[in-house]
Image (cartoon, rainbow, N blue to C red; front, side, top):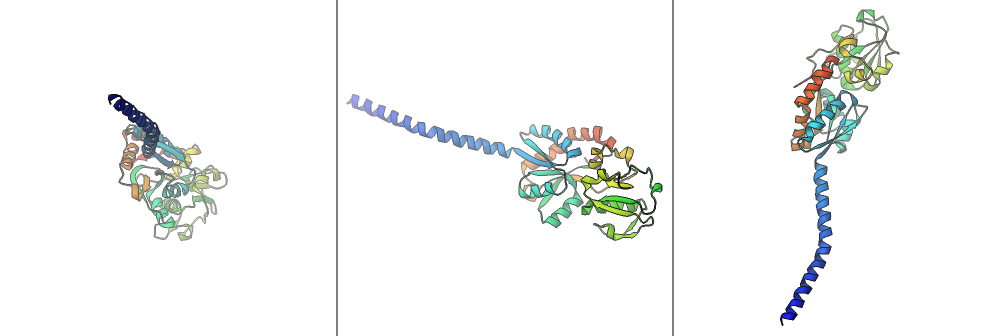
Length: 278
């Protein structure tokens, strides 16, 4: 009788071993899937334009790593695709634009994006390879301005503030809203990223600081006129509205407004005319 019991016990153990052989690979696969999904949740993809946003993102990436997140940086060379990619879910966040531009894109493209943190201001400036002061502008000279709605309005307001033109009231003014143009200046509208390349073809161009820097133009040194520090056009960190209160979003905002990022702006960017907002 004991012998029969021993045999039965051996059969049970053998059967359990067979079951375990089948279960363990399945459990391992489930564990691997869970780990992968967790790792994916800890990876945030952000879209940026090259300068200075990419440099700040690299510093924020090191700060964010302390919270256990990996920041993957994807660079764009225009102002439209980063918002479309964010809205589609291809990005978790983007960092390249100011608030009026975001507001206009949300309205124009029917997006649902929200800014979560102001980081810095990049003053718009008027640059030239042909003149050194506004007094040198001649009748009929050609001036280039960005062609996207908010930056064009911003550029024209800068020119109006410096008494080159007068404009109708309103937010998104264009060259069609010019009411006075004493020098009969001709305006050329083009993509913001292309502005530095047109300096040899026009008398002057209004250029965003990031694109001016790529052309080795220093706002404090090279701009004929430049926006004041009270400019409302702060560059912001942006996510989808549905993600704005998530823990990873708050961690991202903390990283971009960290002492490390501020120190970089103060040391490297203030001399170029870029100032922090925190």
